Every structure is written in structure tokens, then in C-alpha cells.
Image (cartoon, rainbow, N blue to C red; front, side):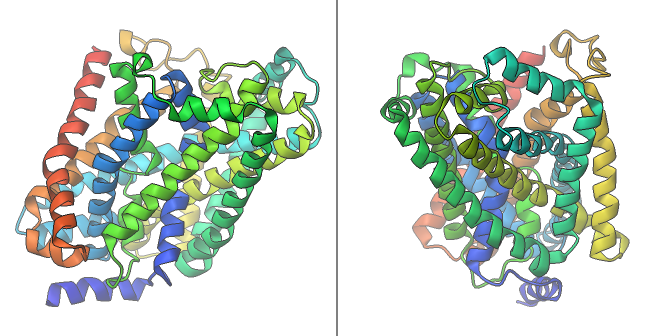
Length: 465
């Protein structure tokens, strides 16, 4: 009892979310980012549509939500930054404190991901101006390609927008929980949902909305490969902000009267709804213009601008779409910086604002390497001597190692730690779930989730070999 009270006291002294909805908005803001608006539509297009969506939903249910619940438990039960919380819980359960390696990997992954995520967020910011000025109107695919190519080829432009995006993120995180994180998500998340509804409404007028619905929700398993299944599993990690210590950091501000299970399920549902709505917003525009849904990463920055440029009121709705994309990236950027700042603030015993500025600048500096790898250093492949990494720039490598190694590894260690080394009674008391629901989660976390993550690891090792 004294341990629980101590943890709760630690959380209270650092501040708590004002309500369950505030936490849900923040966690959903973290989960709803470029992964939903940018990545989900194109990986769905590349992997056959409806069948991929079904596998993705299954991965969210049996792997994503269980790990998210475990991470939130660690944060709330420890009541400190992710690394300190993991150490405290390990000590209470009389196991090796080296289990905190899971949180260390997560905090480091969040830092690295934000460094290049900020560059992509900068692309979205720059496209707001292009759309608003009508630069896409009536343009050919070659002309649209020149706009995007010109952005990537310009270190000055990329650095400017990378700086703007990081400044926005630092501004919010530096203001702390109530004045920064909570206030931002209470404004940005409703605005994001409203913008997405407007763009989906616009997509229904294209005459191809039914085709998009069929593409997303009518499964054709002949189009689904084993590689597609593994992409779905990996994307479930990416989109729900797992393995980045984010939910540990957010969980440390969560009051003990709130059910972790119901809250995590709500976040998972909201995250999935946004991803599917993004598909319903994007694919009607793609199909209406005779374009391919499997265009890859260029779907948002090459294919959609072409579609907006050919449609009535395309400049207006194109602007709204890229504002939506920026808001999604911003809420995720905030969540990526938070666990690193929380750790640095408590480790160094310095003010929140100073911690946010120092960590943000360090992240911005690392991001310059990604900026330059898109132009001046585009021919530099640091691991080019290995066949699996031939031609991969710094940007590509940071993306590859965080998504395919660090996030699954952190998630795996978290699942094993909570599932096998934390006292079942402690978990049951803290989760505030019915016995049946708790047993389902507990067994998924112990047996199903680790197997799913190990399969991804093995596949990536074979691929790298």
C-alpha cells in the first residue's frame, strides 16, 4: 500500500491530467500523426487494400493495445520519467533493474525519430503555402514533381521548415503538462477531427467514394503477402506510438481513478478511426483522377497535390488537408519530445523550459543530417558496404533502425517485463478491469504479443541477411 501511495504521490507532485478525456486526447494525438494521414493510406495501397486493413486491425487488437496498456501501467505505477519508473517497478518486484533498458531504448528511439519526423513535418508546413497560393492548380504531374523535388533539393528550405516545426514542438513541451501538453491537445485534436471530416465530406463529392469504400473494406486476400502481414504488424507499432516510451511518460501523469484498459481501448479505436477516415479522404481523390493508390511515400506529396489541382475548390481543400497534416504531425512531435524532456528534466534537476530547449536543440541538430541526406549528402550511404543497406542515406537508416529494430525491441522487452516479472496481483489492482478482461489482456501480453514481435524481428534479420 505504501508503494502505491508513494508512486501516486510522485505523480501528483508532478501534476496530473485534469480528466480521462485529457489523457485520451493526448494519447490519441500522439498516435494520430503522419502514420495515419501519410503512411497508412500508402501502405494500404501497396498491400492490397481491405485484406491488409483487416490484418492491421487484428494487430492493433492483439498486440498494439496490450503493449500500450503495459506502457501506461509502468508510467502510472512508477510516477516518474520512463527510465526511473521501470527501475522502480523492477526493484519492487525484486528483479534486475537492467529491465529499464526497455525504457532507455524507447527514449532514445523517440529522440531519433523526432529528428527526422520534424523534417517531414516541415514538408507539410511548406505545402500549406503552395496549396493556398494555388501552385497545384491545373499543374501536370511533372510540374508537381518539380515542386516536391525542388523542396528536397534545397537544404535552405528544408532547414527553414525543420526549424519552424521543431520550434512549434519545443514551444508546447516547454510549457509543461497543464499549460503546454493539455492545452495544445484540447485545441489541436478537435480541430484535426473537424478538418478530417470536412475533407472526407469533400471526397464524397468526387463520384468515387464507393470505390474507396470497397478498396478499404472489401478484403481480397489474394493481394496480401506475408510481407504485407509484417508491414501491418510494424505499422501497428508505429501508429500507436509504441516502443518510444511515450505512453510511459503520459501514463506518469494519469490519476489512479482512471481505468487503463478502457482508456487504451478508446485510444486504439480513435487512432484506427482516424486512419480509416484518412483513407476515405484520400483514395476517392486518387481514383477520381485515375491515379494509383500504391504510389508509396509520394502519395501525399505528389499524387494528392495533382488531384487537388484538378478539382473544383482544390486550392481551398488542399490547404485544409495540409493544415490537417501539420496538426497531426505537431501532436505527434510533442509526444516524441515529452519522454526525452521528462527524463532529462528529472535526471539533471533543471527547469522544464530549459530541458525542452536543450533537448529540442540537440534533436534539431541531429535532424540536419537528415536534411542534408536528401540533397548535399544524398550519395552518402554510411552502411553501403552491406548489401542490405546499399544506397540507404542517413535519413533512410534512421527510419529503418528505429522502426524495425528499436521500437519492436523496446515493445518486446516491455511485454516480457510486465507479463512475466511484475506481480499479477499488482497488475490486477492497478488495471481496474473485470476479471475476464484482465485475464484476456494478461494472456495476450504473456504469450501472443511477444511471439508477434519476435516474428517481425526474425523477418527483418532474414531480410537484412
